[in-house]
Image (cartoon, one colour):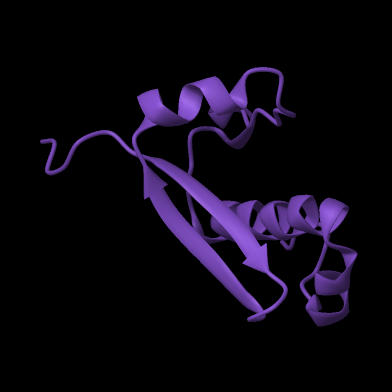
Length: 86
């Protein structure tokens, strides 16, 4: 059952306010901005289609690592384990 229309999620770090901002965006409006942008696909079959706590943790760590590529100051706040946890 679809409750709301399709959305893409944009996550960014605002160094001035030291906040992570999450925004929901219409995918059609976002698409032109993504042409030629870096893409990091995450095949769900690599995780046996299990979107569990460990998957969510690893996804969050990956998002923070990607943000830190352009804004290395955020690395000083990161203490999350970089490798999978059993």
